[in-house]
Amino acid sequence: MDVGLMIRYGRLVPGREAAAMELFGETVSFFQERLARGELSFFEPFFLMTSDLDQEQGFFLVKGAAPAIFAMMDDEAYLEIMTRASLLVEHLHQDLLRVGEGIQVMMEESARAQSKLLGV
Image (cartoon, rainbow, N blue to C red; front, side, top):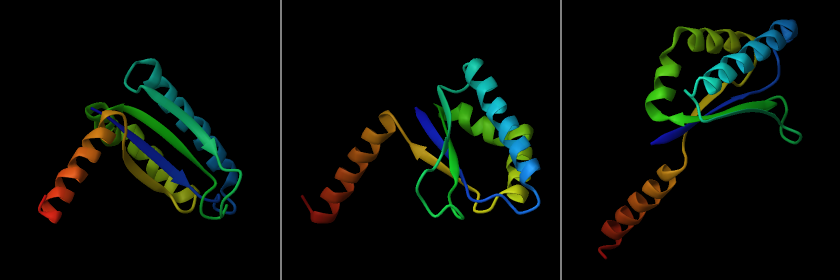
């Protein structure tokens, strides 16, 4: 089953803008290489046009088979990227997402839970 990963970030830490921009390029390369190797099925960076830009300036969306995403998140290179990012941007978040057939699974689980709750 595929899962998604959304990595969100806010404003750049003042005085560290150049390092943050360099890391952005490295991060794009990191994900593009994995996409080219077939380890990911989707990758795209986004910048927000409207938002509280202190808290949310952009995000990366990544999608792939759950084992590949989990392995990537344990990879030393990924962990280094995230550690550096935590020092260069504010409001850094990683969110795992249900995608594809996982949406249907979630809907079925929700329907079962609702039936049990209502005694139907």
